[in-house]
Amino acid sequence: MARLDDRGVADILAIAFMFVMLVLAAVFMHTYSLRPLRAATDRQLDLKSGHLYMTLELAWVEPYSVSFLRAATENLLIEQPTVPGPYLRSAMENAIEYFCPPGYAVAISLSHDNSSWELSWPEGVGLGVDAEKQFVRQGEARLTMAGGKNIAVPVTVRIFEITGA
Amino acid sequence: MILTKILKTLFTCILVISFLLVTVSAYQQHRTISALAELTDVTSAIVTRLSVEELVYVDNDEKLHMYSIDPAKLENCPTRWEINGKNFDFRVSVGYETGDEHVLGPYGSAPPDDRTRCSLAVACALYENGRFLPAKLSVIAWRA
Image 1 (cartoon, rainbow over the protein chains, first blue to last red):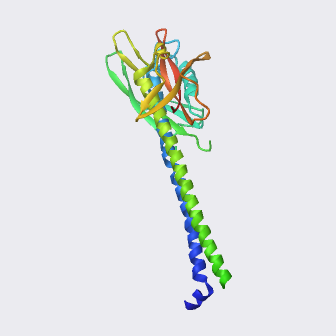
Image 2: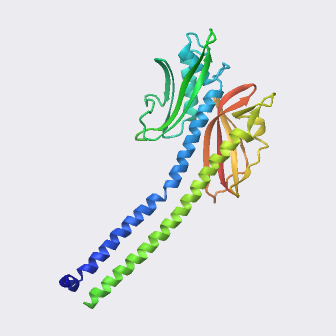
Image 3: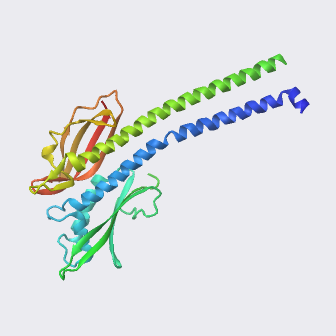
């Protein structure tokens, strides 16, 4: 140990350790400082998801006086819905394309018993169930059938990050 | 031997100075990021308040239709709000598509070039001519 001190190796080791600590501290401080901004951006996307759900529940499928979610529920449950299936898909795709945040995809799904109604934009991205970053809003659409039976259909609106975007 | 000692002392001084500079830089970045995060949250708060309170369509039975925008309220909406004891200005517009894209507004003063701004666009329903149209509520906010 005395020989190491004589050669100054202990001092060099101390300086090298300080250098490593400096690099680690710099990386840690700069990485950690971005977290609040990422969290705030995620909160905005969560807000967008909620607004999209409410909009689909309220806004009408032109020229019909029926909301998007109501029309989708009718398409799922009854044989002759107010809005024909292909027209609803086209109108909803146009609306979602208008609202979809860049770099993200939107998926809407309704299910009842063993049947389901699904739509996603851009085409072919799937429902994003396994997406790493996703903002989900779930609710219920209700429809009263001809016999007076009230059926509740679970609705999921999901905004998710497109992998590799 | 003296030269070695001088070099060691010099390296130590450089490391200490570097550490101080990195700490100051990280603190400044933290302050900038915190201000940006605050502005982002304030923009979200403005959008929420506009869509559930200020611009909400109220029907003849005084029933509030949250997330439905009444275009008549856009023009008279104040565009400077105090949030958490700080004043924020914003510019609001509502866009919708009926074949072509239409934009109502923008309402509010133009955002200054020398300030940090945050923009947010969310989906909403626009009540126009007795119909609820899918529309986009856009807000650009900055610190007054």
